[in-house]
Length: 292
Image (cartoon, rainbow, N blue to C red; front, side, top):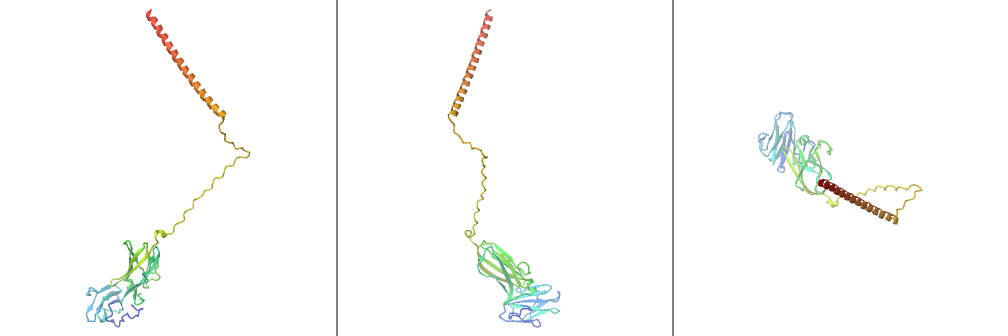
């Protein structure tokens, strides 16, 4: 596209002029400016002049302090001129600007990291003109099976996974979690142009049954306590069943209790009889005194 790109789609500029033929369906012009005060205009083959202020709606025009970027869709065939108000200025022109990448339609694995690279190209040459790169943003939108959209931004800053800054190759990392069909829309946008490429691919996620089954944990076996050994020369006492002597002792105890209970009742009865006799004697004495 620019000074380092001399491919057939590059339109040569001589004395501010370039020729557009019927095969060209779009032209992008980057006109550098010697200073901020420079005004850029284009002169069409019919001698009409086009500027940022009187352009047709389909013409996209970006003005910065250092350059103007202009995209002409379906330009008129014939000789065009780049006009500047003053100073020595340069212009670079490219046609058939394309967005390319190393993204493919092959099946991808879930939960695996992939590096993606994208670039603007003319034929097979990566465009690395700094003015164009500074005005370009490349990003991807991935439509997932659950309907959610994943946004991924590409960078050309030499950081993280990007190998070289400002070389025209943008880099992004992609990791997908869901299995199923995905659509990736790669888009390069600038104020003056917009390029989109779509990719369809499947993501393979192993079913739950295919997931490795963790080995069952072995039970922890604690050592048994050591048996308590008997002291030396000690003779273990054997348990003996109750003999006839033990049964006789139990019977004797029952009879003793019954005897004590009987004696207690006799004593209570005697006390009651004694109380009754005393009461009768007292009533008799009282009766004799009354009759005397």
